[in-house]
Image (cartoon, rainbow, N blue to C red):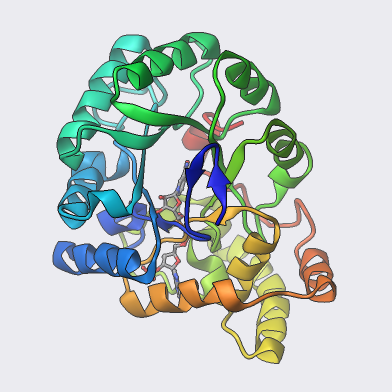
Amino acid sequence: MPTLGTLEVSRQGFGCMGLSHTYGRAEDAESIRTIRHAIDLGITLIDTANVYGRGHNEELVGQAIAGRRHEIVLASKFGIVPQDTQGDRRVNNEIAYLRDELDGSLKRLKVDHIDLYYVHRIDPTVAIEDTIGELVRQKEAGKIGAIGLSEASAETIRRAHAVHPIAALQSELSLWTREIEAEILPTVRALGIGFVAYSPLGRGFLAGSVIDDPDDRRHHHPRFHAEALAANEQRRASLARIADRLGASIAQVSLAWVLAKGTVPIPGTRHIAHLDANWAANDLVLDPQTIEELDAAFPVGSTVGERYPAQSAATVR
Ligand SMILES: NC(=O)c1ccc[n+]([C@@H]2O[C@H](COP(=O)([O-])OP(=O)(O)OC[C@H]3O[C@@H](n4cnc5c(N)ncnc54)[C@H](OP(=O)(O)O)[C@@H]3O)[C@@H](O)[C@H]2O)c1
C-alpha cells in the first residue's frame, strides 16, 4: 500500500472534481453511487476541494461518505478562490481565509476532521511558512490530519517541509504532462513526501473522451483547441497501438504508466464502468521496454498547447 506521509492509501484514489459539471453534466444520484462504488472497490483516497462546483462537490462527497467515513482517507483543499467571490483574485492563502474555508469544508463534508488538507495554490503574497504554521495549528486543533501542497515549486516544498512534514504533493502528471519528472518528483522523493498525480488521464484526452457539451471547461484549455488537439492526437495513436498490443484500453495504459512512476493517481469519472476499468489498471504491469516506448512517444514538453488557460496558468508553478 502506498503511503502519503503516515497515511496509508489505495494504489489509486478517486478524484471527484468532474462530478460537479467540469467536464460535461453529471447527475448527483449517479455521482453518489459512483463514489460509493469506488469505496466498495477498495479505493480509500477520496479527493475534493472547496472550489469544485463552489461547494457542490464537497456537499456531494459528504452525502456519499455518510456512514462510511472510517473507510476512507478524505482529502480536500483551500487556496483557489471561486471566481465570482473575490473579483479577479484567484489565489488566497491568508490566515483568515484559510480558517473560514476549512470550517466551510468541514460543514459541507459533514465531518469534524479532514485527513489530508492541501494548499491548492501557493499565494505569492503570503509566506509559505505562515500558511504551514496555521495548518499546524489546525492540525493541533484536530480539524485536519496531514498537510499537503498542490502545484508548488521545489523551493516552496522544501520551505514548507522545514516547518512541518508535508504528507503529499498533488500536481499534474500524465503521459502528456511530464514536466514535474525533472525536479519536483526527485525533490519529493528525497524528502519522503508522497506524490498524488492529478489529471492522470490528461483530463480525458488519454482516455479518448469525446467533448460534446458546450459548457465543458476543456473548451477553455489550449490543449483542447482544434489545432492543438489535431497535433496531440498523432501521439495518442502511438498509445493506441501499444494498448492494442497489451489487450488494454488507452486509459488503462495511461494509468499503468503513472502507477509505474511510483505515484498515486486520482483519476475522475462519472461512470461506474469507467471506474471499474480504471481500477483494473492496477493489474497492468508495464515492462521497462514498454515504459521506454511510452516515454519516447510522449517526450517531455512535446504536447501542443498550454495545460491551463492564461488566468489559471498564472497560479501554477
Ligand atoms: N490539484 C489540482 O490543481 C487539480 C487539478 C485538476 C484535477 N485535480 C484532481 O484530479 C482529479 C482527476 O483529474 P481530472 O478529473 O482533471 O482528469 P482525469 O482524471 O485525467 O480525466 C477525467 C476525464 O477522463 C474521462 N475518463 C475517465 N476514465 C475513463 C475511461 N476509462 N474511459 C473513457 N474516459 C474516461 C472522464 O470522463 P467520464 O466522466 O465520461 O468518464 C473525464 O472526462 C480531479 O477529479 C481532482 O480531484 C486536481
